[in-house]
Amino acid sequence: MNRTERKLRALAAGHHLADPLAGFVDLAGIREAVEDLTKAFAPLGRVQHTVAVKACGLAPLLRYLGDLGVDAEVASPGETAVAEAAGIRGPRLVLDSPAKTTAELAHALAEGTAVNADNFQELARLDGLVGPAPRSVLGLRINPQVGAGRIGDTSTATTTSKFGVPLRDNRNLVKEAFARRPWLTRLHVHVGSQGCPPELMAEGVAAAHALAEEINAEAGFRQVTSLDLGGGLPVNFVSDEPGFTHADYVATLLARVPALADGRYGFVTEFGRSLLAKSGFLVSAVEYTKVAGGRPIAVTHAGAQVAARTVLQPEHWPLRLTALHPDGTPKTGPGVPQDIAGPLCFAGDLLARERSLPLLEPGDLVVAHDTGAYYFGAHYAYNTLPRPAVHGFTVSERGEVRFTPIRRAQTLAELVADAGGEFVGALPGA
Image (cartoon, rainbow, N blue to C red; front, side, top):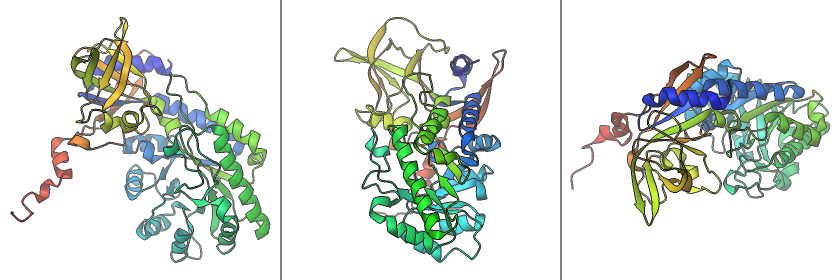
């Protein structure tokens, strides 16, 4: 049973589970993505695969991935806490962030968590924290300055990117930093995500590999023993097809740097979207419909609070949408251009503009596909809307669907607490 068939069965079986808005995760799809990733990178030898927690930092999902052999890349104290709660900690974590505090670094070193320093000041801070025999693998993130992809906001290897040490500007200083620190044994590079072609990503990896070779040659021994390749493989949002695969990416890497397969370096990956996006989808009820200026509008519960990038940058982050009857079966009929509106109080809160779908009616359902990465975890709290429930599902060979809770819907009491409810009355009267 393929991914599309599993999704259709889950939609038919699970429409009754949904609040006005809910997320669903195809667990078999994630397992298949992990298998494809592992197989694809086998030619590189020793590889630690991590999932970028920012993509979907839900503890049960991280535990599920951890049981499949995928570790975690974290970029904040919150992400670290969630990963550790999921049982992924110590050497199974990689800490990346441009703004790590001393407390974060100390915690990582005590746990044996790998750390990629972002800049020279962070290296100086580590000098005062690292003991004679650190348990952590310690690296430095470089910015190879190879240019931007199609989406500027997700391109991290531009000339002026905020991430990493700009390599063209500081090559000799980077080599001196390694020469003074024998505990520095890893180079980290990440060119960007979605919109960055794999060829551009491969240029960044080539720059890191060439630098590692220089550092090791000048040191007279293999000081740099591993390369963190980052993540960022783009996802095809046009159809259910995967698009550029992990195997395609590895082929691109080896065509650019054949020496990656010579066994002299270990590797780390930090994929998020390419592991998770295709296995998730959002389902929202249509609450009301109207016509304005001759254009039909369907008001749903899915807007910028769950799809901020799609709403604010629709040219870069369009989502495929499907119209269903209230019982979860597909709607048929001629396509009618209509706006799919969200619930937030600003005019631009539209999941899609003039999207051709069978005419939607109150009670119908709208499915937003490929939302397994970023859409469940990056909640936008405008209008104090609750985070929706997320359900995992599996489908047996006989077509029986089983649902497992991943996250319950946020309650109104929790929203009040987040809004400072415990301090009501604490402010002095006027």
